[in-house]
Image (cartoon, rainbow, N blue to C red; front, side, top):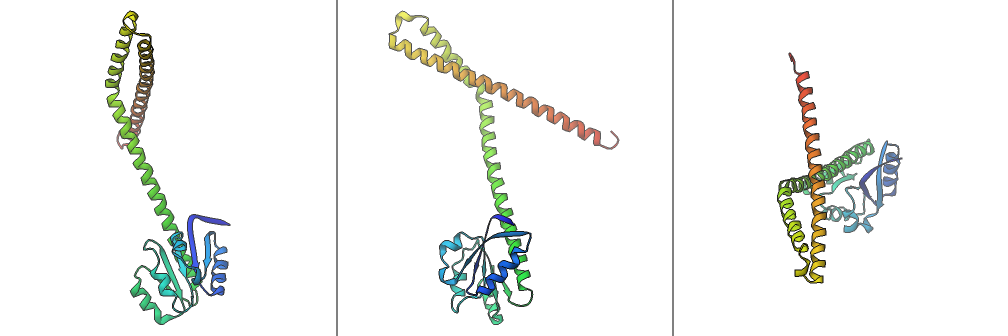
Length: 229
């Protein structure tokens, strides 16, 4: 049985036959969401917060308005009711609520509507994730460009540190043993940083070469595909 993840479907109803009929019909579909069944007595803010699509079926008198009123605005809600006179009022009070009369064909209609809601939520989730990844990639690219721009300045500073450390170490008589050890440490760390920057510079040059090669291939492909060329 395929499952739509991470989408979550919650069915709230006090009519056991309603829930059994809906779940049985859904299990015959190609894609089956993760379904949670609740009665109106155990409906809480915690359960509604963990659900992306909520289906409200027949419930005890006086429960429907409390359930609908406590739902998060971002939650997709569908109400199935056999009380036809209540439909205009529900639609007026909850414009984002989709109300389906419990008449012939209601199960098929409900499955289509809820499945589409789940697909849209999943697509929206993927889009938001892609946007976050793109933003993260852009920040990293900005950092990379900054490092490329600053590598010459860093290399110059490291060269100065290494040169002055070499100069001080060349006159050991003017330094205490502790000072010489500290300068050797500075010298060694500066050499390590210089090695890292050299590797970074090599990597930057390789990336630029790859970009130029890719651009040349793109230009060649565009030229060969241009009519009359």
